[in-house]
Image (cartoon, rainbow over all chains, first blue to last red; front, side, top):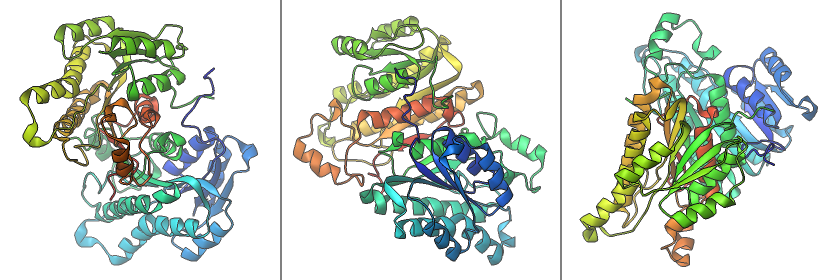
Length: 253
Length: 250
């Protein structure tokens, strides 16, 4: 009988998710728990983490969470030391701020690049150094369609960080393949998360922007979460170095 | 537990269904709750595949239909045979290595008809006859060849697969507002009959170009197809899904 057949299952796997306190990270944690995973959740926002933890399935699996500022390399290493061996990692924490290029400051740029680009690189480094990644295992980066496939006004800093993530993802895929560690990214268009509702863009502008999406809507956190799960699961065991575009057709024209 | 990758109750038409990626996709679809309609030019192999598959859980039987999709009448007959479908997997394809100076128009036409014209015309006819449901998903088996990498002697195949991806994106744009999604899987070398012309030695040497150090099993591609057919990918359209063991990295 095939009732329980599921090549996308994460049963028996321990999965680390950064940015698990909201948005895509929260959805990824919830969906991964529904697919049988034990979660290790990381965020700077403790309240968000606690809320996510309540929403998980499989409470008997003893899901873990860590309140960590991923801009702090020492804190990353300290956290990694205390981790169990994991089978997958969703490097998802990210921030954005729209700034026209003539107003970019190096402080602002460094802040965004630290969270979006340097943190996943350092986390991956310490996971490897402390031998916390099982063989095989799968690392997924939340990159973006922004920068990688399409540019938009005021998005230069975010776009460069996400292009950087994809460049890193491919390099890591090449270097780690022989260890059985796969690396891929999910590259969403606009997703309905707290990240897009910081008051810089009006509701009307968002509605107008949705006309650029052939599917007529923005993504939902679940859309990105389920793609991440496909890449974390053994269903994708021959995939490495792939950027999976999830953009409702935004980049077609 | 609800599986977001489930294909429960969906009807999926798969071309090239008699073997390789097509039959692996059929098996994955059935296991995930779908009912399949397989088509292939190879009648015996098609029958063998059909009887080897588990029964569909939908209560209706899986079906097969022998057709040469380069023949307009047979293609039309297949479309008439089909009920309304939720998913289409345009997967049938052929490959033959020929150095550019030895390409004949006959060979070029034959391969393009199978790999490129047939999926275009089948998609057209299914749409025209309103056989693809709203919310449906179309998946093309394209390739890493041509789209991401070229290799010696593979000019014709590579051309057809680039063509398929351009068609896929166009259909995605046209059908997005109708809620029909369109994507491709783009595999590297897969252990199927298609690569049977390579010697074992050639294959072992070629594997060194793959960071994961193996060729794909048909299932590796079938799961990508299943993801794209399922509602788990409902915001994915116009995407070429590279499944290549890292081959295109170096």
